[in-house]
Length: 193
Ligand SMILES: [Zn+2]
Image (tube, rainbow, N blue to C red; front, side, top):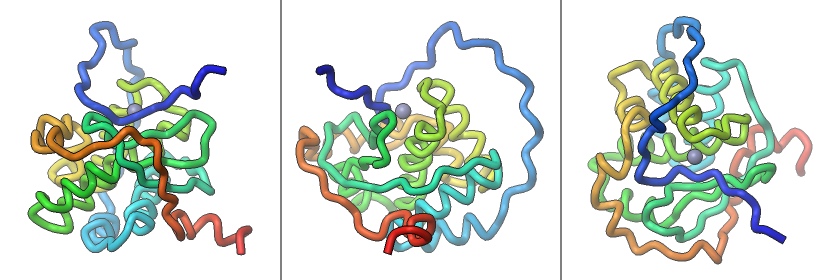
């Protein structure tokens, strides 16, 4: 049996030379200041993920309930992954620990976490192509927070280029997974007690 295909946010990212022609996209509505405020003050992954889901819902009008989160020490070049058809997003705990130590503020750390989660969440909504998912992550983030927000800069760029120290995280092989309890509680509480 072959191992399941994984869709990860990883580095380096070089856009393919021959991207398909883009259809014209509808103009973005003005950003929602409540989203930026809630992201700045989010205290755990659950709260950051609520912001991700609201951002996607407000910009794309799409939603997927019932996703879980796990943490694992993954190789340095991988931020997170989502196994196709899986209902779990796996974040690279080693990378997050490094970022927690190096970020200048909670706001910066949360913006970083937001980008990892948004990327995988959008994979789970069906954007499987890496170039396409990066474009839609950037668009959602710009629409939700505005062009000048740090999360937008992060979503539009390459995390490993902006934060070269990520390459020196003490990564692992991803064999151990730690489930995050309470993640995505907002949607699961309707039917899980
Ligand atoms: Zn990806």
